[in-house]
Each structure stands twice: as structure tokens, then as C-alpha cells.
Length: 210
Image (cartoon, rainbow, N blue to C red; front, side, top):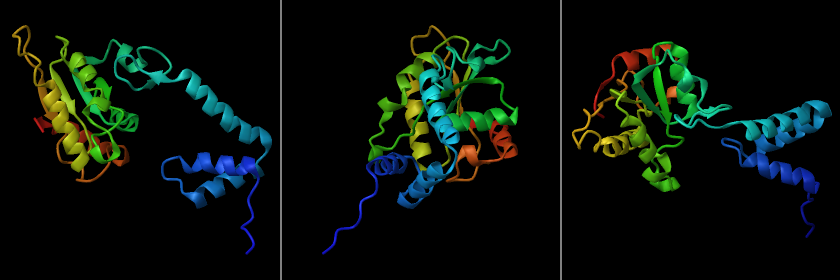
């Protein structure tokens, strides 16, 4: 029996890397790879250069953990931001979606993931100790939980509440108020895919606890 033909080794290596990207299967990877082979070399290499540059320059903000070229990021460093409000999101895309509404002028904390035991993401991976230290600052009066309104988002919200439970226990300061986005966002939906009006309404209608 004849063996299936094997493509060029370099092309196979590119396909393998592309298939590792979220939402990219073998067919999508093949389309992208052959597109990169068709376009002018300068265009294809510009993509490689952009990837290299972003990996060299972008680091998590030292305060909110959002991707940034500076430490702290421009949002955390802006003196006009309301430092009594700290909004917790799962991903940088959620931060961008909230920021686009113009309805929120506080600070952020980006978890970078969501609680998902099946995927090996536990509470420790979310940086909750770091969040607790940030929320313990005297200037923080309210922590707004803006995890996605689905099963894993709800579990993540509960883990956040548990992590913040000890703040104020010593009596040195009053514990910050803990609220969560209202259910104006559709259950099972993703914050970064909602329109600005829905996100603004959810912030304005936030409620205590989870």
C-alpha cells in the first residue's frame, strides 16, 4: 500500500504551530499557511516581526495584569481614574469591552483565566492572592466582579469572594463592598462580545455579592 504523501517539513511545522492557536483546526491552519505562502514575502514576514515585537515589549501590568508596554499601564497610572473602584475581569478582552462603554472610570484587575478544574485552572492560577493584596489597599472601597455570566464565571466569582473574605477582619480598615455585574448580560454570554450599552447597563445595575 502506498503511503500518503508528506508535505515539506517546514510547511508541516507551520501547520503544527497554527493548529495550536485557539479555534484553529487543520483546515483553517492549512488555509492560513497557504495564504502566507501566496502573499508577498514582506507581508508574511511583517506578521512574524509583529509577533516577535509584541512578545518582546508586552508584559502584564504590575498592578492590574493587563498587557502593557509600561509598568504600570496607562490606565493604572492615570491620575483621573477612580481608585476607590476595582473591577475584576477574566481576560484583557473583557477590560477593553468595559472600557469602550465610557461608563466605568475606576481601575481593573485581570485574572487572565477562569476557574476550570477540567482544564487544570485552579484558584491559585487566577492570582487571587495578588487580587486580595490589591483590594486590601485603604483606597479601594468597592470590588466589582465582572466574570462572565455562566457556570465557570459563577464559580470564579465565588472563588474571588472567598479570597477577599479576610479583608477588614483585623479591624484596621473597613472591608470593601463586593458587587457583581447585573444579569443584564445574557447568561452564558461572553462580556467581550456584548455591545457597549449592555455592558454599561450591567455596571450601573451591579448588585451586592455574587
